[in-house]
Amino acid sequence: MEMIKPVKRMKLALGPLLYYWSREDTLAFYQQAAGWPLDIVYLGETVCSRRHLLRLPDWLELAEKLGAAGKEVVLSSQTLIESESDLKALRKLIADGREGGNHPKVEANEWGAVRLLAEAGCEFVAGPTLNAYNPDTLAMLAEMGATRWVPPVEMPRETIRDMLAALPESTHIETELFGYGRLPLAFSARCFTARHYNLQKDDCQFRCLDHPDGLVLASREGEDFLAINGIQTQSAKVMSLAHRFDELPAAGIDVLRLSPQWRQMDRVVAIFRALADGDIAPKEAPARLDRFMPAAPCDGYWLGEAGMDYHPVGAPA
Image 1: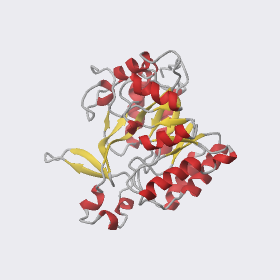
Image 2 (image 1 turned 90 degrees about the horizontal axis):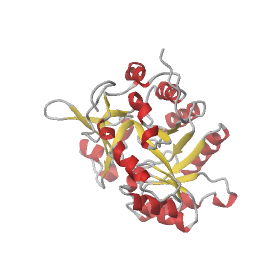
Image 3 (image 1 turned 180 degrees about the horizontal axis):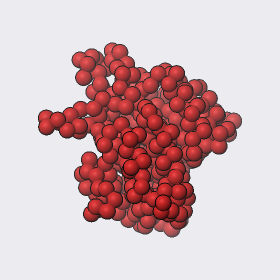
Image 4 (image 1 turned 30 degrees about the vertical axis):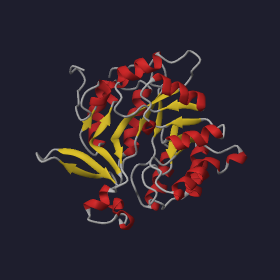
């Protein structure tokens, strides 16, 4: 077996749960995650305010348990703020527990959260939906308190590398890349899952619970094209950069984000940890990983091509 030791140790992050699972399944998932070889775990509801089987106190309790297990915990904010109650929840997320000094860092997924965090003097993670597409925006986020940023999921490696190279020398910020999972592509005020069942958004009957990895849509040609997840549109294919793991350091990536999936997430994490530790070579990863994935892989965005494309190791990139 070929062994490749990485130039620097890549940190692994478990991204926020994008789907709606039962309370019991969600708690069991994170209880298991406490024992997985992860560096960072993101907690919280980022997609829909109607998903409230877990409330902020539940997330904070999970944060305490995961922190005790040695994980860096980050609380993720909601991406689309649609009401005063959403804004109230955001303010509580940022303020609650701050007095004790043990409150986890927050991932800001919209600019209102950035403003509130900056006003509070809090360090934060700049999420992918902030759409930081140029070095000036990234430098501004760092000045406002961002210690890590997640590029938009469609940003190619060359753009990430060039953005980081163009930052002022005084700017210090980690880069975390979405490297595994169905790509979160867009958000809308309309609930696509409710519409699929001919239901009103406010009377959705929580049908997302029936689709723990999203509801896949096919094109007229019968090819899986998108997945709907409430108000979120995702790729049908699963973004996977396992076979391109050795390309990440050159692009300035410090952290690789793995997005939760319904089954076999422990196996996925173990494979990426083996890659990060240099115990397996990237070209070996697809054969190990494919059987644990809910759909076919893609890597096009990383290469500056159509997101649904996939280039195996050795193919032109």
